[in-house]
Image (cartoon, rainbow, N blue to C red; front, side, top):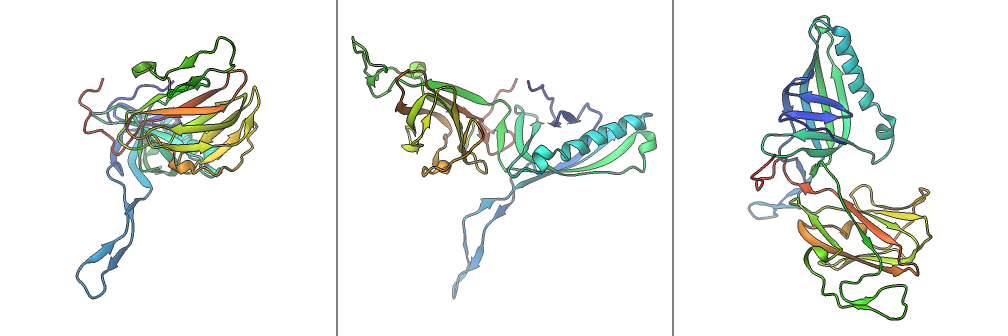
Length: 303
């Protein structure tokens, strides 16, 4: 379970920095709007320029801080070693696309999370004898901020919000008229952020030829596979992670554009269909709300 952070505190790999900790921060850069990349082309025989689309670059958070353990240089050395060990974690450092979370609590907002890697953790030992070790830390991350807690919902197969049969079909046959509304509709998902998010979809068998639909946009993921009982398939639509993976770790390709399947801000609906004679298959949808800024300007109350 994530622990609570206080204002002006950060945390990665279980190491807490900032106000009220043994690692006070002198300055921090990189929390504002990230840099952009795009071409600027002069207009031939005309004034001005043509601007191409701007895409956000990676966000680089630079933290000037230090380990403060007065009279106990050995304690300072241990803390520095923990930070260096976190930066050297081979599960992140040597795996393409692997990231770690950096949690941040800023005044006026809840805890936000960035995903990236520690790219620099450099200590200066000149004043270590006094229990003070200055540190230069850099964290390179995705440009967006995410909620501290992941949301999820599970949707069983066998109910169609547009009407249909519940499998297995047995006499007497009951037909859903699709009249459920509000909180009774089982496929509602809510992105409380202010930008689109990309969900992780997990299908649990037994089922065949599953098709997942985002109702408002009509975007679909059509897998065309059979998932046996006791097995599952994970469809990860997140940028840099777009894969379809079986329980045993094997991956396979799909013709469906995973990058088009996203949850817009607010409430929207997910539906899915498949062949399942047992009516026990289910779909899990997991996502984190995403934000443009460290503090949402529309947030008026934070506990």
